[in-house]
Length: 104
Image (cartoon, rainbow, N blue to C red; front, side, top):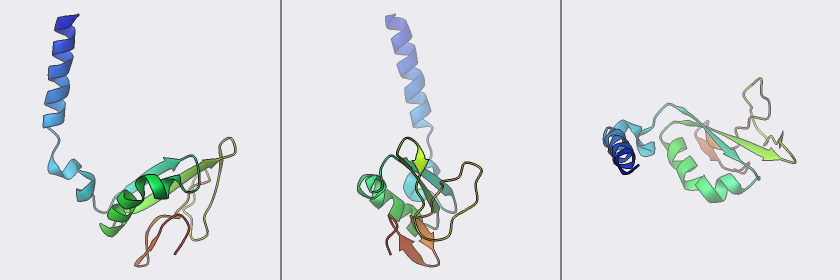
């Protein structure tokens, strides 16, 4: 048991040490990032700064909000078509402006 723990720890440490600078969120550019939140303002309070950083670096930020037993919510504005529906572009970088939590 102790040997297994040591081997797993060594494996995990070797995986972490291989992470490059490109894997850090602040280095993401031209990517699409999907954020899941259970309530309308959770994304703003929990990861608002991260969303702003991603948007500033020309990433597309998509927020999926789950309300009332899984029914999605759409904020005003353009929405990408999706099979799953309820995708929302209430956050992100659109036409040079930041939109967070459906506000401008």
